[in-house]
Length: 205
Image (tube, rainbow, N blue to C red; front, side):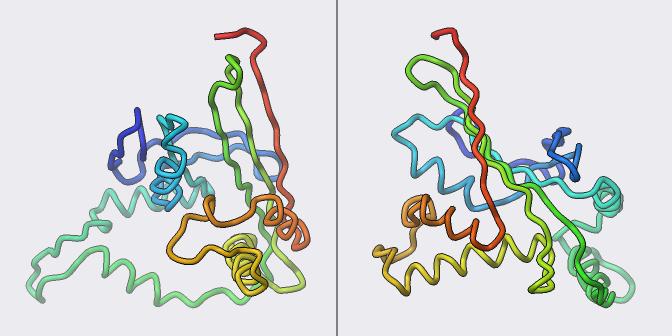
């Protein structure tokens, strides 16, 4: 995460806060998690004086509690532990055990909220701009909300590269290479509509 303009490594499962999302998601507890935007956004907008960039993930509370319990047992550790049967990595053992469970063959019936909050000063007034969407599972493609909003964006970008909407080449951050307006239009065509909410103080700072 970035605090006061500096990158800082945070402990696992830290930074937990309660976040009120739109229905049907409602209040969820969100924790810090690793995501590429935390690295690219401060570099892209360095000239604007970015001071803080964080990324949080909120999953069902019962899932969070199970993860916390497993971590408290040491099953998230990377370092090998020595037993009478040999040395093993707790994390790899846990991953192997999880992979033994079959994936349920059920029709997805879920939704999630994707939210971005940007806070700063515009013309002397403290301003908060929020971009938000509620993503639902897709009955046509038989995919969950997570699969939809993970797979659709890179598919759109790949098509933009093919039709030369994106001319840039190389390893680039999305906020540098992808035309935002066109991208949001394409998302909406696929059932992911972004909404913007702005709040601005009336007092000048």
